[in-house]
Image (cartoon, rainbow, N blue to C red; front, side, top):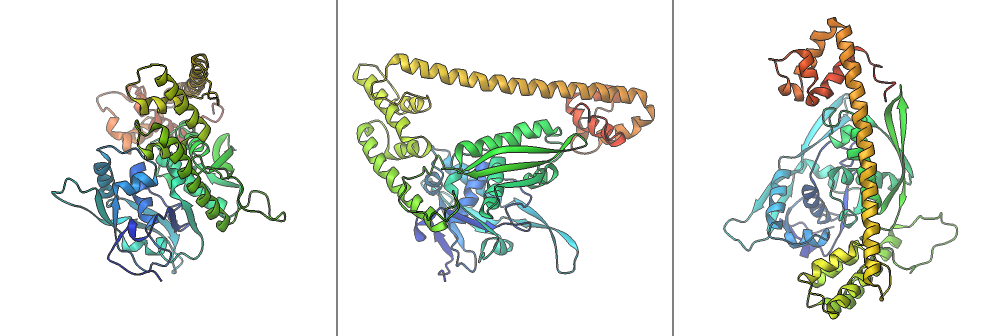
Length: 460
């Protein structure tokens, strides 16, 4: 049993990077709440400081250095203030659960995440903050024996979207249950992510800004690959989404060379918890060894942790090639004011894997990267144009129906004046004039759909 203390620091528990939380229908994973990325990092760091044997919460001391190291962040003067502000915001954050209690009735339960966040006054050198979980979270974080999510928080180091983090948690839990696909209704996804109908009223916008971006983030930065996002339609509207996913090597936790044997009877791609721990341990020691080698050649320009950060986010070959090319440029007399920044730029440019690369190859690689970026921008422009065209068609249809049905006017006006967007309704203008305001398109379309539910089905 873990020793109970009133204050716990990361130095008391070692370099633990695993977070655990209650999953399932009545757990944190699919509860309704929103955090920004910095708030998630504070929350996840706190989770890594909980021992599986803890019976109660204590006060947890978080250092800026701990969070920077956990999530491979670059250090700057704003880090402490950013973390302090995020912790203080968490005191006012809550999660919402919908569940059936012992009396057979359904309840909506609201639970705060933290009870306090304390920062030292008058000590400008202090870079730590003390935080405490709310006692109501005990069943969701302590003594977890079944249906819980366990993951290495470092797998989220490169993710910078709160929705991507939430989708990772949801899919990671399903994969822990040995599932390779999971179906969520669009309504359920909006509910979990706390995205109301007013925020992304059109599914196409919700898909582009939230779902596709999250899938791309997972594929690029985490150990989950979403192979396909299949849509299910009902009355020609997208009602549900099926995610097909699998495990991949995390870019920040690169797969080690095989160091263990797996029996032939075991299904392909299934790795036990013990095997995962062996692989992670091998990866850590491998990165440290490579970092030592590369750091020796650039020690006068960058800090060692910068080299480690490069290796965690990019392939070893790419880092070696970028360093080799930069040092070659310096030897040839090229004046580079910010060597670390130049190496980072080269790392971000797809370079040929050779020690003898020349300027022509660099230019070709840059041109290729530029073309790829332009192609992505063109594709995004096409998607935006499609969405704009759909919106304009909907607006034309809705306005014509408003002309054809004068008896709808009062109902439409009341709907547009209510809710979040009601403050944008201008009472000095007519209903038709308000309907021309793009800000009011969402409630305008909803009002028309309520009166004629299938009005937009042929358009979508």
